[in-house]
Image (cartoon, rainbow, N blue to C red; front, side, top):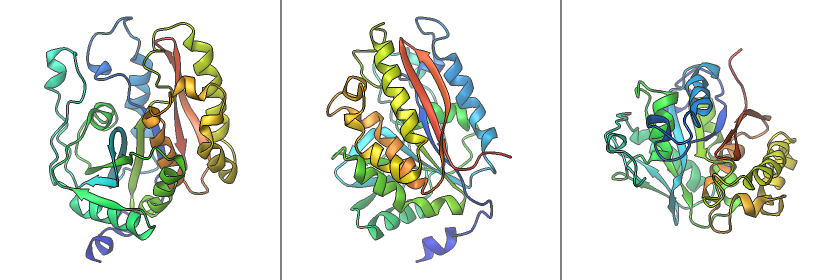
Amino acid sequence: MQAKDSLTGASGVGSMPTWFIPHGGGPCFFMDWNPPRAWDRMAEFLKGLAATLPAPPRAIVVVSAHWLEGAFSVTSGAQPDLIFDYHGFPPHTYALQYPAPGEPALAARVAELLADAGLPAQQNASRGFDHGMFIPMLLMFPAADIPVVQLSLSTTLDPALHLAAGRALQALRQEGVLIIGSGMSYHNMRGYGDPRSGPISDEFDDWLTAAVQAAPPQRQQSLIDWAQAPSARLSHPPRAEEHLLPLMVVAGAAGEDAGLKVFTDRVMETTLSAFRFGPAAA
């Protein structure tokens, strides 16, 4: 297939890592917050991530917690618009711009890899980039000059299915494509700002860190069974775990590569962390 031929091996940069990053609360990095500076450490972490890559990516696939479909879907437009899927924030946050190009050929490659793995997949030429994509990307890759496609989650919320989707996309890493999962390691909306959430988020974060950093077979099984982890359902309430599932995709795409916690911070009384799988800059 022409799309595959035009992409395979085109970058010559070796294997990309995969990342699971916290995308913050709405447009939090671009507005005043109470308490002040709550998101500063996370913003600085995101700003420094590109420098940790072994080489610049040829393209990026972002798996956002803010897009769920019955079948895995991928943006295939050449120049996707932005979707301001947050509410009640200052007017200037609805004027943010992230004019990164899409890449229809990469979208076709993603859909093909998923279909080859037996996972229903579709392309969506009209869907734009949501804030789970463009808010952190404004910090990580502010020039907006790298092609990006966005991949949805599945409405099944099945962790094994999302791990399988990641495994299907593993070959992209050898083609210079960076795969980013954008979500939150803790996401109980009622818990943010509540001091009682601190020990809860700590307990789940300790378990999640150990699961990510375990040997790949154990890591995979632990992530499939994540809902049985300590404080799991207090950190991600039932039927609201979409902010954790991007981690499953990037863990699946990691293959046999090791996982590592690369950031953690206390924000709004909760512990929030980021993870990397695979190589970093020498």
